[in-house]
Image (cartoon, rainbow, N blue to C red; front, side, top):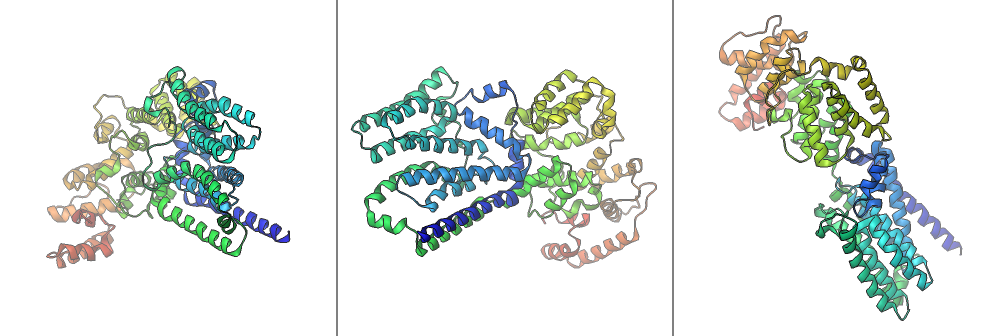
Length: 590
């Protein structure tokens, strides 16, 4: 008896430790992944939103998933919700396995492990986890009912409702109920009843698609189960769906082989050591195969951009290895917003002027790419990108905020009110929406908002065609020559494209933009240009620092020494001059 009490306490402690690790994995290693999921959807407190969610099978899974995802506004709260869901899955799995002769915590922990893998992908949203939890809940309720007639009533009356509420997540329940009845019940009519189970599982989705839902025929049995996963995530989803039926089947055969049952299930030092080893292997698989550090860093850069935490963004992007267009795009934006673009641009990886904006493509670029247009006060293009992102991704707070701001600045108050009214029915964006609603009734208040006041001052008043993969910087400057960001981005684009003639012409206007001294990269470019063109071009009111001239002379001497061997020159000069414009200019492949 004492041994059983001690073993139970050890199991509780070990299980608790596992879920603490589960929580910390998401809270510490995937915080920006959680933030990104929150930004990709919007839970609206309204009857219309509820009706919209239940317009397709799986409404309860979708609605509840969206409800909990709104709390991912805090990554720690999101990790806590993940953990609570994992605990519920573990408890239900343990109960189901125990009722089918498998009293083993490792077997019950496998679905939790698979969820950790799946939730490491941004494609596996929380409505998927909610759907799986509802699936286990129904089956646990089914096997709890001991009276045969009541159990059959529960299935034939409850499963059609479950299909409406959970969609494709209800399909595996048919197999589970079928296995339970055939292998663990002895009723004479069980063969006929299980055939009726299958018939119900086919007819209900088919008739629902014809009479209740408007859904494509190929999605009748799977929607809303995610189907866009790949590699380990796809395998994990397949195993997650099949694991509980497999364990029910295994429980039946293990019960028949008593010697195997005695070896696998009881408490023993060997089983503890084996279990710990298996858990360690599980953790290694999650960390090595599912966890994507660079993806979370990339999403972190986006997160800090949305919160205007530019220094944090630069600190994070500085640790990002290699070249990533999104990271470079946000890094350049953060450099400008923190006043460092012309001094530190080449301290970070660059890919030419295409690193100043994202290409127009109907993918995630729409979601991320509109930020630069907002910051440039290129209002109509900001609205364009936000609207396209809304169409492509559905309701999301980021796009609605951009649309509301854009329409407010343009004076389209009725349209802005529609977007603000949606945000007003949310938990975390209501205060922001109400503040901006005040601007609609009293536009003069916008002058008290630094962001909106700047947008109003730089509002474009002439017509021009939007460049497909450009920023229309010249057009913005023609409308408002005082637009400093447009001017600095113009200089940056010329430097990044190695267009020194264009740069030499444009830099003459820098005195109009409040530069107290010449930024470092402008100095470097002008020194090189003057040396190469044998000129002495310096903007009026500024001078070149002698220390920068001396550094260029040292660079030129070193370059001359290795001129016959560019590979060696790139390697040797990179050690000291990699963060200079000179190195970027002369070694484009490095």
